[in-house]
Each structure stands twice: as C-alpha cells, then as structure tokens.
Image (cartoon, helix red, strand yellow):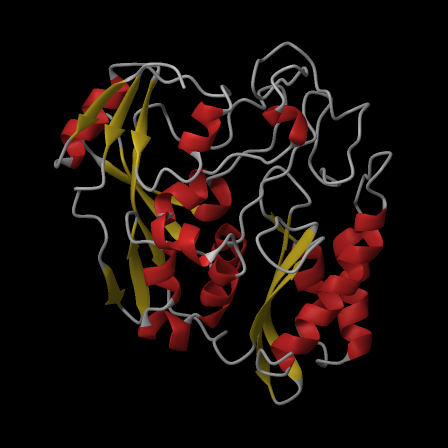
Length: 330
C-alpha cells in the first residue's frame, strides 16, 4: 500500500471540489473495489476523500418509481420493501453479486463505478491498455475465456463485471450526478458506461471529480414477470460468465413490452434491442424466446477461448425469459 492523504467531508460540493482539484484523488465510500485496486498497486491515488458522511443514503418512492441514494448500501437497497415488491429484478440482481458481507459495505454509486475483473488488468506484470494506456492488451492474444463477445476493440476485450447495473439497464434507470460546476445533471444509465474503443482506460462518462448522488428508477409494469439469471463457475462469490436481466409485460399470452440485458459479455451491460424487437407482439412461448435468443447473439464476435459464451448466452436468455414468464420462479 502506497502512502496517501485521507480527507473526510460531510458536504457533497466540498467533496467534488476536493477530488476535481487533484487528478490523482479518488472518492472513498464502501471501499470494496478501490481499496483492492490500491493493494494490488493497480490504482495509486495520492488522496482519498471519504464521502461516507454525506447524506446520500436515502431510499424513497417518487411518482411510483424509486429514488436510490448513491451511498445506500447494496443490502439496504435489495431488502427495501418497496424495491422488493415493485422492482424484484433489481433485488435479484443485487443479491446475485458478491457476498453478504460485501453487500453490507458496497454502495450503489460504487457498484456502478466498479472496474473490470480481467486477470490481465489485475496482473501488473502484464500489458493492459486499461491500466496503462499504450502498453497493449494481454488478453487479446492470451487466455480470454471470460472476456467480451460484443463491443470490444483491438485495444481492450475486458468486460464489465457488475450485476446491479444489468437490472438498472433493463429498468431504464437514470443516474443523478453532481458536476464540478456545482450543478446536478442526469444521465440515462444506458449512457453511463462506455465501450473501450481507443480509450479503454475510461470506464464511464463521468468527468474526474463528478459524484454520483442518486439513481432514479421509473415506474414500470415488469414487477410480475422478471428474472435475473447469473451463470458462473461456482454457485457463490463469483463473477458471471454470462448474466441475463429479463423482464416482460404481457397481455394475456402476448408480449407488450420486453427487456433483455446481457451481462459479462461486453465492456458495459449489453441491452439487446434485437431480442426485444423479436419478443414484442409475439406469444410468450419457447419458440418466441428461442428466436429472441438467436437475434440477441447474432452479432457476437467471440475470441479464441470464449466462443462458448454464444451458445451459453442463447440458452441463458431462453431460461431467463421462461422464469420471468413464470413470475420469477425457478
């Protein structure tokens, strides 16, 4: 662990100012990702600005939807009665991630900000454009079993590892951000994360010093038919090989609205417009679900070691849609 300055503030504007004035400063909330990155010598902030005393942990209803504080913990969010009843997809996604102990510490804002779990990113002896721009991508010609099959570039093939964001993409959430000019701005969650392109070191569209203050999830009609499926190498405390956030609104047996978001297949949660288009207006049956799965994976570009994700993704979409149609029951 390298030396760093520690500053604890209780005012959001002061916290934003402190970080924005120092390019090597970072916010500290639950610390479940940034502290690991510091211990591994991947990130080397010279100052940590502790924001845990900011009053940003409230979870409240708003126009039939829910407004979730950036500093509310994952556990508090997943277990909130209104969230459980009206947004069960979000609860399922959160509890699929990490462990109970980590969810008790991890915050919603930090969850959105978490960095990739690519082993080449974590191994500082290996080249990584995300960790050190211009050094190359070790995974591109290396062991890329867990890596992207959508949206990757010749600079980076890493995936976004989180679960909560996959549900937020399906639920059309909006991220509220305090900017460095003191004004609050909003960003649809689908525009929050970035694809790697030529700048894989940039995970998201926040400017340095900007602070997530909340996440708003609008009212929807998906509560009765939604499901989060996470496929991984072991049953707990593991990141997904493929994940699916699926939600349906039906009229009788016909599908009125659909959401299909794939996780761990791209540098950001991958919402499939192709799958959704294949579902809307069709009967909710296995034939429709299989057609949607084929549409979702039709544009996949697997690497040397992860072609299995194409078939796994198709089967996962079908299973997630079946369980969503069954009211979320396995």
